[in-house]
Picture 1: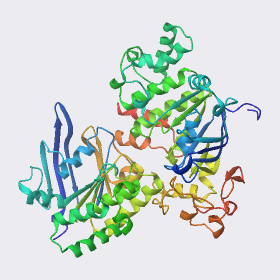
Picture 2 (picture 1 turned 135 degrees about the vertical axis):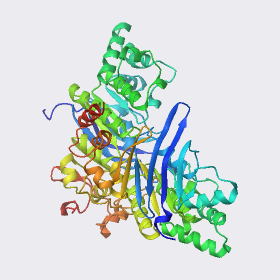
Picture 3 (picture 1 turned 60 degrees about the horizontal axis):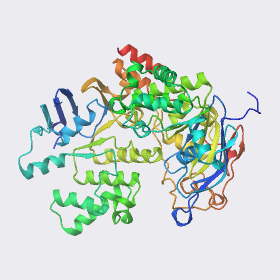
Picture 4 (picture 1 turned 180 degrees about the vertical axis):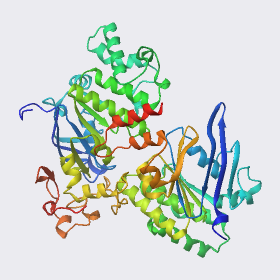
Length: 326
Length: 270
């Protein structure tokens, strides 16, 4: 892959701010990330980190009355500058989104077949061809009797089966980019494994770029090529998955790794991070993580660390060069 | 009061809803101060099982005894209901739904004390502060309504409220599932400390095998209302015998995980 190829997604210095009194700090501050074709990129963080706002911005979905800065480029075009017609085209064609709750993504009154063929019909595919295509897609996501399934309603499917339908619909338009926001969080573990297997297989086969948003570090470590870690609206660290998990440079990444319960026999007991994540009403000076950080120095609560190169990755920590013992 | 007589003994517990048997001959023993994980997916009957233990569902068969006292039949009268409530307390998954939004944290804990123990007002207030302190909450939180607290803080309140009754057994139904991972670790550590200090027995209902590894001594795997495997936690997680336990384990994401292994495990389950 050449450096010149247009990435599936390029977010550059994205800032999202609510007007006036609603929030003390920006929801997103200088978020920069990139997803190349065929790549799976993780966006990891706790509640309030801004990961969901960041991923929804890719579809041009922003909180009401929010002010934005920076750029969100999908296949080379800035989403934030698009008008309604262009946004509709983007959502129908280039980007598909998979949300946590499949029941919130489908119209309960319409048959699954209508849901699947809607986009294709809108793009001008004849009815019979669209139906055949929908059947193929349902087959690809492992739904038995795909032809029969087209005639059924969403309430006739379990959560796991309906999430397969949503994935099939997401792939119908042959998007360049898939954005998955906690797509398996509401599912049972064995169902999660099946859905992840389907999603990663189809995405690899089609060369689709995927931005995978999750709070689950273990899941991110299992499926992502690269991972971005967010805290209080900023990206605090990013690297290739192995490097990030073996040699985290930001104390928050290290803390997240240490507090996640691991299934392996030799795994240490989860070690909590003291305190709690920063809410939108708080705007601590300097590094937002300083108050919870075991490695903080006086400097940390005065100067905000910039995201800077360390080894192959980037980290926003004044002491990133010192290395952290896990 | 000796340990052995105070254990929780559940024998052949059953629950049917219409034609569907939700819980089928579930038996286990929870010695005082020990921790048992009840693991399963949705529909496995894990929540129905514990709801029968606390009296929120009526069993169709089987017995539940603590220290030999039977609690499977409906309680007769207020005194018996209170006595049963004191023995087993429960913490629910969603801390946003399990607390009364109009009652302050302090009053919420005090209410339990007033119900179960004859105490002077000052002694009761002191006990409230002590219980909240045990879960890491101070005076400021005591005066607050639940709406002002974070999810982790609310779950601490739910734990303090359950502990106020000085139960023999604490049932935790997915009690850390809705919390952020850094907060989840705090609550798990808190629960570990409470178990060591208070000597209370835990029934830890969860779908998360990684959490089970770190907080339970024994584990029981439920599938479609039946126990498929039970025993010491480390033994079962390291050398599972039942194909369903193997499927659950192969479904847990981790580095180097291949979700296809879970699909293979499912096929071998038939």
